[in-house]
Image 1 (cartoon, rainbow, N blue to C red):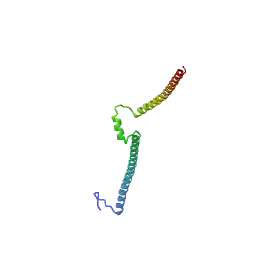
Image 2 (image 1 turned 90 degrees about the vertical axis):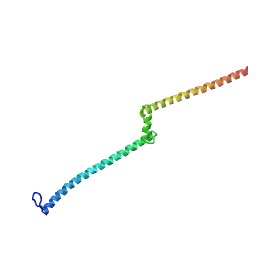
Image 3 (image 1 turned 60 degrees about the horizontal axis):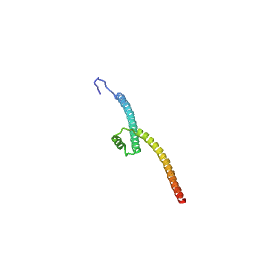
Image 4 (image 1 turned 45 degrees about the vertical axis):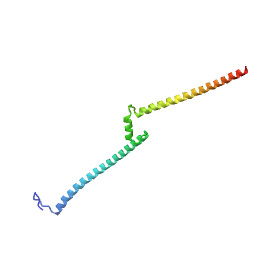
Length: 134
């Protein structure tokens, strides 16, 4: 088998050449397989992170009383006041504490009113008894 540079390859030379070519391509194939495994691993990790993010968003939306993140975002975007949820919850806690105090005050005032009404009733009965005695 003559070539361009007038070198003739015999069986052992061809086998050696073929062996080098095979080794070269096996090495490239190994490198490509390692790269493929890295890409697969990266893809699996990204898919897992995406799954986790979607589920966290779904749980958050449901915790806020919405069906999904899209519905929650539409509601938030349509609110005229720029109040964060965190600020809203802080204000809500303050208002709940104020309401508890007001309820206690109402209970005290109702008790005083009941005493006053009872006192008036006693006073009226006393006046009635006095009138009968005269």
